[in-house]
Each structure stands twice: as structure tokens, then as C-alpha cells.
Length: 265
Image (cartoon, rainbow, N blue to C red):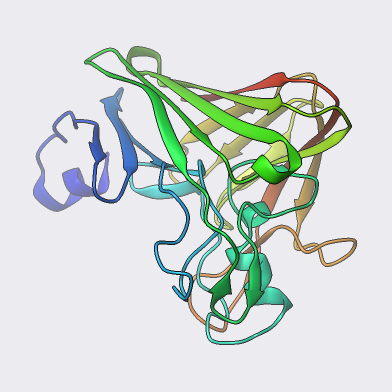
């Protein structure tokens, strides 16, 4: 039973998906087998103003909830008004469910509230019908190093199945270190079944299976400080707490596509 059912006593209607043209954010919705699923996909270009204090370097990031309970999360709002390492982490690319290349943010926080050059996102494909949602978006935040990131999301509503295809296009020769994190809400319980199969659950017994591409190395991290900050969540300003992060990495020297799968039960 969803939260709306508990409040009204009526079954939850099947929800529609859509695209916020102004905000450039896709919202994937479905309601199947008493599971309300919402997946948010950020297709925004970089910060509209170079002095936008609450901006994040989070192009092509995702967040997912089941029955209104968060599973895959954005990092939160910790220490917005302070110049420190934590602010840089929480606004940086690695703190979001997207791809980072060569340990660099898509856009760099160079001073308090001051960001480096902008980047642009491009919607390459968009298909929304009753059975399948398919969105493909790219961004050029790594163009200076000769790399593009394309993310395709395919949501099969009838199966509660989500495919995430991340393509790293390499225009220049050389090696590139790729990081793909998946951040889970602190109230979820995450266990590792094997090197590529992870399972998250909440107190309402909703279940999310995450299957990682075999080309990626994986590590489950929680509340890490060294060698780099990773696996933290901030629900309100000036607070933070550990969260489980599935940290996926690969070293590549040519264009590669990594496929991750989300299955909701």
C-alpha cells in the first residue's frame, strides 16, 4: 500500500511520465504491482549563472524512489554557505549518480559560489509511450580532455525494469579513468550478492536489484574520508551522515558503453 492509499483509502492511479522543458528534467513514472516508481533524470545544462550558489555539477544524474521512499539519492544540501572541502564534495560530480572522468567535475567550483566554464547538454533521443520510456542525452563537460558522456535510459514499465547505458566517447588517444557511483538513502539496507549484483531494501519491503556491467570494478563504500570523500548524505544544512555507495570504476583508452540494470520487485 502506498502513502496515498493510506491517506485516502483509494488505489493509487497509474501515473504519467513527462519532460519538464523549462527545468530540462525527465520524470519516469509507473505504478505496477502496488509499486509506485519515480525516476528523475537530470538533463539540465550547467549553472545558468556563474554565481548560482546552489548549483551542482550533476548532469545526467538520476534519483529513484519506490512508493515515495527514496532509494537512489542526490547528496543533499550540506554546508552551502561555507567554503570548505565538504561543500566541494556535495556539489561535485562524484556525489551524484552520474559519471566522472579523470577525477574531474563536469564543471569546477573555483571559488565560493563561483563556477568555471559552462557545459551544454543535448537531448539526442526521446520516446515516451505506455509501455516503454527511452531517453538519450549527452553533455560536453569533458570536451577539453577529449571525452563525451552519453547516457541512455530505457524504462520498461511492464517489468519495472530500467536499463542505464553510459557511453564514454573518446575523441583523443590516451587513458581515461571512469567512475560511476550509485548512492543509496541511509534508511535503505544494501547487500552485495556478488561482484556485480547488489540488492537494496527498505522497511516496507520494497526491493531494488542493481546489476553492474562486468567491465567495471565495484566496491561498496560508506562514510569514507580517505583516499577521497565518498558515501555521505545531507538531509539538511550543517548535517551529514554516511550512506551506502556502490562505487564502480574502469580504466579505458577507447569508446566504451557500460550497462547497469535496475529491477524493482
